[in-house]
Length: 254
Image (tube, rainbow, N blue to C red):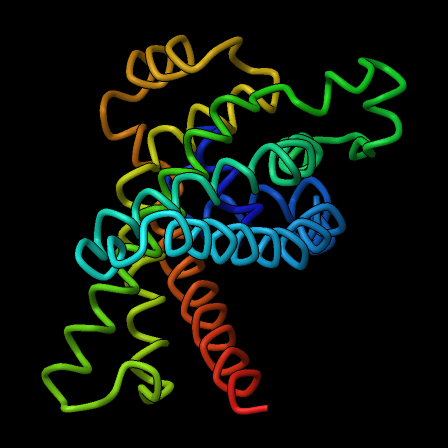
């Protein structure tokens, strides 16, 4: 699904089905898995970096500003989420996204997907950080929105149903995490479109990427890939937040 969303952002495919058909025609079914290795490395590692960074920032706020986070939970969820997203983007997401997007950009074309080693050989380490600013903007904003939505929805659901937040049912965490993921995608899809174009070498910067997209496809072009990204991010974030919640509960009971 990630390959489909990238292709829809870079090209003019009108739907996930048309995108999948173009990829299969060029590379076969294996083309749907272009960029899978960097995506797997990225997905398995960036969540740990994100949640670890968020907890570290939360603990720092509680230590230096006791009581403030409970008084303004929404503000601090956004602030700590912004910080955690920036750390995640610069430490891991930017370089792995660069390789992933380049591989996915070639999935509907003839040619061999590029590897991180080959990219470094051609462009140096700096080549891995092409589009780093756009990645940091996307990641920090999306992580902030996800933690904000998760905390707010979970707190509201627990209050309405009479549950203790620390012992909320798994389905509450699943719904809150998934909703946060879906909302974050809808809010920052334009910057994600720009990021994909920059990392694929199609545009030199964020502003030019946005202008080019609007000129070619109108404002609707900034929503490219949403039909794929929304369900993907809903499920991924729902699963991640639910698992983190369950693991935290188990560790606290040990």
